[in-house]
Length: 119
Image (cartoon, rainbow, N blue to C red; front, side, top):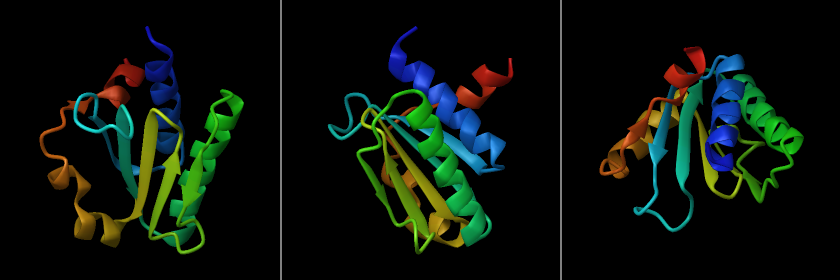
């Protein structure tokens, strides 16, 4: 198994541990030059959105993955956590439906990482 997929499992578990909702992983390989995977999820309050993003950053740090960028933390409407091959989009519930990244990247296949973890 490759390293990126291992990290992906760790960050999906981290989001799930903080009760992130509707966790979705889009396989962006061959679609985007920016990252191999997008993790998209949401929280129901600013505090929860920040807690999810903080947990993702901590998980990346423990795995010696550089967090290249962390944007939107103070506003907690849409926090972007750039971990190189994996970019996490942590939304506030209302913002997620507004931006609808899943539809924007509708040609990207989804990965059932949470299902793999729970097996």
